[in-house]
Amino acid sequence: MRPLRFALLGTGFWSRYQLAAWNEIGGAECVALYNRTRGKAEKLAADFGIQRVYDDVHELVRHEEIDFLDIVTNSETHSELVHLAAEHRIPVICQKPMAASLSDSESMVAACSASGVPFYIHENWRWQRPIRELWEVLQSGEVGRPFRARIRMASGFRVFDNQPFLRELERFLLVDIGSHILDVARFLFGEPRTLYCRTQRIQSEIRGEDVATVMLEMASGTTVTCELGYPGTPMSPDHFPQTFAFVEAENGSVELAPDFRLNTTTSAGTRTVHCPPPHYAWADPAYAVVHASIVRCHADLLAGLRGERLPETHAADNLRTMRLVYAAYDSAASGEVIRL
Image (cartoon, rainbow, N blue to C red; front, side, top):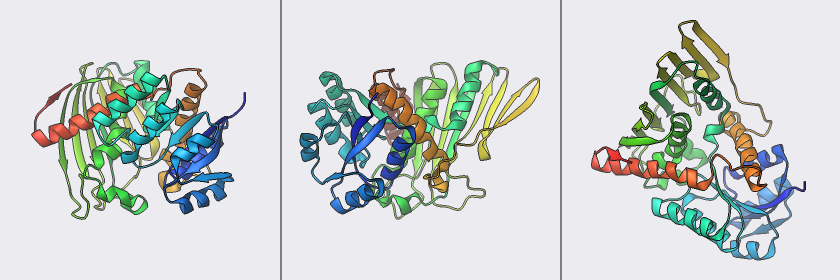
């Protein structure tokens, strides 16, 4: 089966890890890069041996024979680029968050659906090995039905150093890390019935919120609290970018603990499993668990592009996550519980 040809749009911080992960799984070949600043695209092209570079995305889609587009630009540009893909009937993968507004997200999904264009979201967080292992325990029924859970991703890590554009976002944490963690909540526990959110801004030099707490009442009856934070304050220990979880269930509990330890407790005692991410030479050690998850996410998306199955994070599914993200902003602004 021949490799699928694709163009990568956007050559910022995450782009080289996207390309490295595609090379890791095989089955897809990047034949062109686009970036508004041509010099950045040319440097990345030289590093990865990619022959063609564009600073005009319309020129790219006119001249390149490609099987899909992989969008790794800032969220404010996602809507325009996905609509362009729909117009040219090119299957498209888009980085999270899907778009800078809920209305744009809904419009993008509708446009691709109307054109019959596969539209998938690169939502890799749920593909982290520790989170998949937690899901397996919950699915096994060993601890019974969950009734309460906490998911936490908070760190003093200076994310703005690698991604300075995040400082300028009017809405920061909920669209950046919240889109990941709320998707994980859905993945682990299903769909929510209600949502309540409080946000804070601790760092005075940024525009958006950097701390958020979201409480979800799931249709299953599980109460899930999501604790999110990039407040820039020292934390000891700081396990960036690990996600922690504690799930209470009818027959026991499951804890996703620091250093990738998964503790399952029942009347028989506690079983601890170590589930670190796979090692890849190209991954940044500071982001290892995140970068490793890109590989498994890519594999699922590639299967979708080949027509083998519907990927977990197809756009219509991810739209449910985006509705939670923007409902969280509504709740934070109003101080009210949102019924979904």
